Length: 126
Image 1 (cartoon, rainbow, N blue to C red):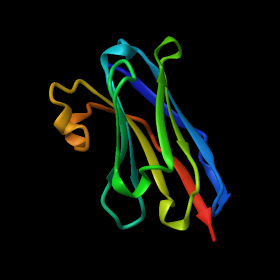
Image 2: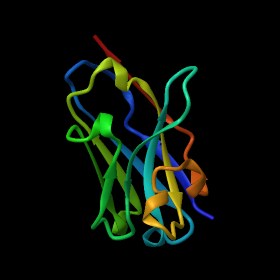
Image 3: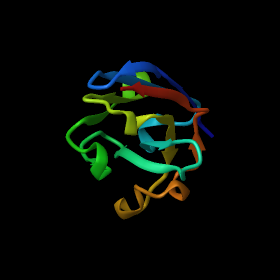
């Protein structure tokens, strides 16, 4: 079992940037697909980005493609989400997730991930 803890959220003006971090403890970090999801109040949790075991393949939801970048550092057991050109529609609680994916096609589904962080709030003002 792996435990995840996000950090780096906060308040930022529209057009600004933030970098989220997700530190994993326990388990073997390099075995896991890592992903970021987000959930706004009264909205369903939605996929943001995912990265495979080595970092060689990444996946992004259309609303963030070209603005967000997911990376990982297996030596530090940490995943990152760099967010640029933020707008108020990006306001949400952002969650880090880890999973043992057997099919790349499941990367966008929350059910594919077995471990979740507590979330970090990102608020983008206008």
